[in-house]
Amino acid sequence: MTERKQGRRSAQDAENTKRQILMVAADMFCTLGYERVSLRNISEQAGVSHSLIRHHFGSKEKIWHAISDELHKFMGNYLHIIIDNLPEDTPPNERLYLFSVRLLAHMLLFKKPIQLIADAVRQEDALFDYFIDRSGQLEALVNNMVEEYNDEHPDTQVKMWELKWQMIMYAHGAASLTPFLTETWSDETDDINQCLLNHWQMFNQIMAARFQIPESQRLNPENVCDLIYPTECFTPSC
Image 1 (cartoon, rainbow, N blue to C red):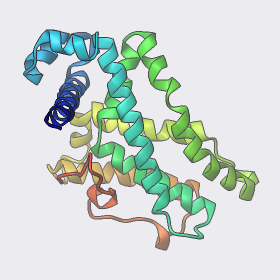
Image 2: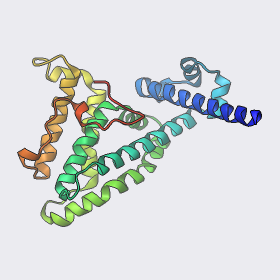
Image 3: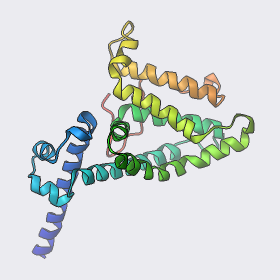
Image 4: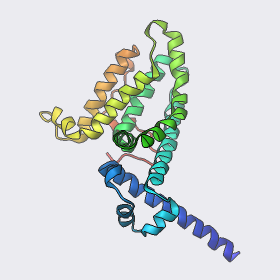
C-alpha cells in the first residue's frame, strides 16, 4: 500500500514538474520568441535541471508542441463555454455576434495563443503548420453557427475565415503593438484596461453592424473583464 501511494505521489510530482516547465517555457516563447529561448534558459527559469527537461520532453520543439496542444485544448474548452452560455433560442446573427465579441475579449486578455502563433509565423514552417493542423477542431465548433446564419441570410453570407481573420487582426494588434494602442487614446486615459475596452468597442461596432444587431441588444461593458467567463486556468485580474 505504501509503495502504491509513493508511486502515485511520484507520478503526480512528475506531472507538476512538466506543468511548471510548460508554464515557464510558454511565457518565455511569448515574450522572447522561439529562436531566442534555449533549453538551458528554460531550465534556469523553471528551477530544474537541463537533463530533466530532456527526460520529459526531449527537445525545445517538443516543448513548443506540448504548449500548442495545451493551448488548443484550453481554447476549445473556452469556445464551448461561450457557446453554452449563449441564450436559448437566440437567432443565428445574434449568436455569431455574441460569440465573436466575447471571444475577442478573451483573446485581448489571454494573449498567449496569439503571441505563440505570431512567433510561429516568424520561425520554421513546421511550427506554424503544427499549430494550424490542430485548429480544425476549433473551427468545427463555429461552422454550425456560420451555416445557420448563411441559411437565414443568403444575401449577406459570412465566411468563417474572414471572421476569424478579423479577430486575429484585432487580437494581434493589441498584443504586439501595445505602445500604439495606448498612444491612440493617450489624450483620454493612461489606463491600459480602458484602452483595451476602446479597442474592443471598435470591433464590437463592426460585428454589430455586420450582423445587424440593434443598438439595444449590443453589449456595452464597463471593462473587457466583464465579458470573460472565469475558468480554472485563467481568471483576469483587472
